[in-house]
Image (cartoon, one colour):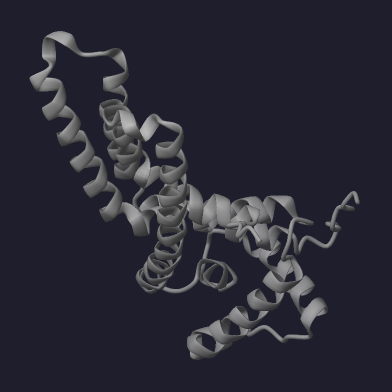
Length: 242
């Protein structure tokens, strides 16, 4: 029997792709500077080793991403979707927010706190909002609501890449310095292919520097808005073709 590593679309986009990005400079360096890695046997062994690393890094990305997510929620004053349902949050206008809450009440039989009740007991109000959001997430799970699914993948990708950022910067810097040393010693006779690891190292470092808490917050808000937008009374789940 052949064992297969099988990932669904969310795992690929949110967990495997960040792992690929942080390992790409090192992989490029190995295949560029070690001719044995380009042989049939070397590529077969490399594929197995690379798959194992990706599987491990995907799990690390998930765990580190979850820890970072909890820290970010604390820093932001709560989960993004929960916060957007608060009366005092202004990212959604009050009239639209009331339509969303009316739909949530109809779907899940919840009674939302008034503005005065929320001010008097914000912790209890957040529990109500969080309960509604959890139920909504379960009801919108899957690809029926494509925008919600896509934004969820985007948030997972940025969050998990932020979790792998220290590892990625270290790997890219090490690969870049190693490649730079090789290029320095062979400066007058450098094959064009040898520049690939150096370019990938620089590109990966620049990409990782763009992955910040602010970027994670933007993608979290985009996901929250897409999820809550499904509460518009006129919106219906699109039919999925079999």
